[in-house]
Length: 171
Image (cartoon, rainbow, N blue to C red; front, side, top):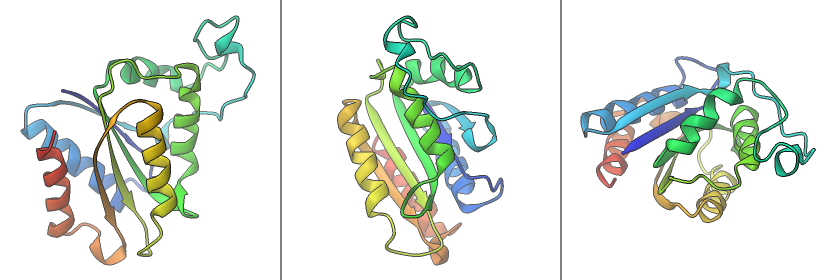
């Protein structure tokens, strides 16, 4: 399967980046084709709600920024993995910008499954992010491919690595 991992932590050696990398390694070891994109390092502006994409643009966004690199990857992905730290109980702004800019695509033509990797300093702050993930699954008509959360004490542990291996194994 073609897997696209979108990692949005600004901390290159942080827990979210570690989780995304562990997912990538496990999926590649299982024979999948994996592309990991660090959206935190990309210049992706928020959606302007201008509706250009649904009118004159015929599906193309009026903004020409680093999101242009993601559109072909999103169009070909069969599995999308959202790896984000929790900021104020949901995805951080870097991930939100990338997701909001999918508005021009409306649906992702080949996506079959979505997975979610979340890290935070605090336990029990995941409900809003998980709800957003589940709404995305419904909107994009994708099955849930697993959720892994890691609060401070669970970050970069063998137990968390095993949870990641488990959801990769269910693809």
